[in-house]
Image 1 (cartoon, rainbow, N blue to C red):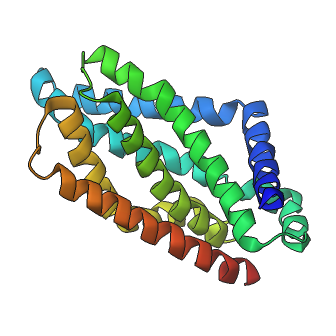
Image 2 (spheres, helix red, strand yellow):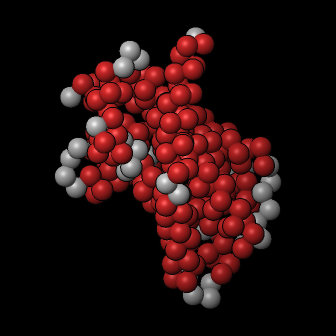
Length: 225
């Protein structure tokens, strides 16, 4: 168990170190997210109250769009440098390789959220009802997104038009997660949907377990191909 934990930590540290050295990744995601937010804001004109009521959905749509930028580069750097062959030939279980890459992507996406979401809360004067629950929503949503995104990124890394294929494959499959996240965020921001909160939590956690399990199983078959 200790050896497995060490191997996962080494893989996570490798990916995070590369991303931190290449600051343009996080900066491009943050700038892209802010630009999309501004486009949504100005498209509503003077209907600021309407836009604020739609903010939970806007936040997660912005996250999906900007998150694809980070996930598209998940395995691209290994493919370009030829490191993917070394990783696959190493005496490490494929599930460990997947978990290391998935957790690193999750941390990277969470970092972008930590920079972006407080800006939204400050600009639109949103008081979060429960910060612990909000943190769990962010973590659960990011885990489901990054697990499926990691699997699909390695599937499309060597294909032409991978920049288009990844969102086309990814977005329809994360719709149940997106619906749960929007309703839970709406409750934490404005107290809406308080009757169905438990049902949305159940859907979010159950679907996350399904996504992570199927992604781990599918990863071994994908890399073999």
